[in-house]
Length: 445
Image 1 (tube, rainbow, N blue to C red):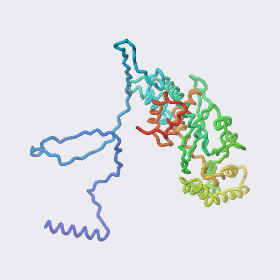
Image 2: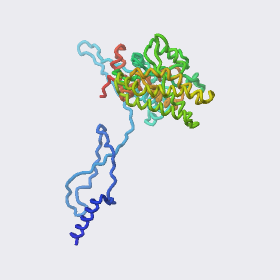
Image 3: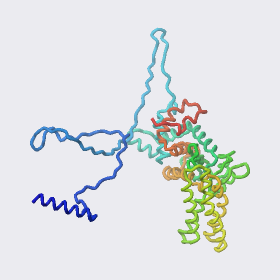
């Protein structure tokens, strides 16, 4: 009977396969498509043995295999004290005294080591943890590090790192094209007061990766107490390349004869049409957005190609779209009231498209300023947490820290490991050899 039953089951299964139908296995376990945990993580084995004797008959057990379950765990970071012991020695013959020199440290006669200073900088300017929160975290480790102490460390370490930030600024200004933008930050007017004023952090980025350039990407930040146009003019004094920028009038001093060329940002043009379409559902605004989307479709195809190929592709595919959009907008403007937001968006677009046209002929340029706007995001996240800069010195320290951290991140380098490496070597490093300490010359240990 069992043989007949098995045979009938096999026949039914064969018929089911022939008809393309298969009954679901109700007892089958769901399979997990989890990625394995990284191999570089330390493993600590915990063996759970059933004992040496069988529970049923008392016989001896022999090993026939094992099941391994991996559980990801976290052990909080801990402080260690590095003791530098220098024996004092005396000659047994002449009684001359001898002792090894104390190695240079980031802060002379200070207690923090390179790793701790790096961790404080990364926690504030990369992970957006204000110093008073860090102080509370360290207090849970029974370590008293007051906010004022941490602020002093930030100031001293960024002063030490300033030559590296200045070197990055030179590299940014040496490129054929750069991206410029600014963002507001609050500056405390004086100590022990809640009154603040609006200051600015300026960002200048060089990124040649979209057109296969060989220069490493880098970002340079500068701090100013206001938004006067004299600041970008001073920052980029003597620069004659192309600057990608929005329509802020403060950048106008950069452009002109024997000065830099301007490349306008089509994202700002698109943004006004998107806002109008969302507000009113305007068909004109909707069509403009679709046409700009076609330009970005060409850009997606041009990305990671040499400049010559990018320019040729844009001339073939993007230029007809760009020209048609410009003529179409000119034709739409007389048909609508000049006082509407839509008319304002069209006038802005026509004004900026004249200065955006250069990207069609130059493969080293971009259609927008998104590269720089991405560099602003860490600042916007940070200011939501630390709220304001405590002083002008604090603003300059932030600019230095953001310069170093964001440049390392653009190279996919762990900024904390790199800064620890830099702070360990910088006190004895020659200032004219700053390039040796750049992120692209760092090799993880």
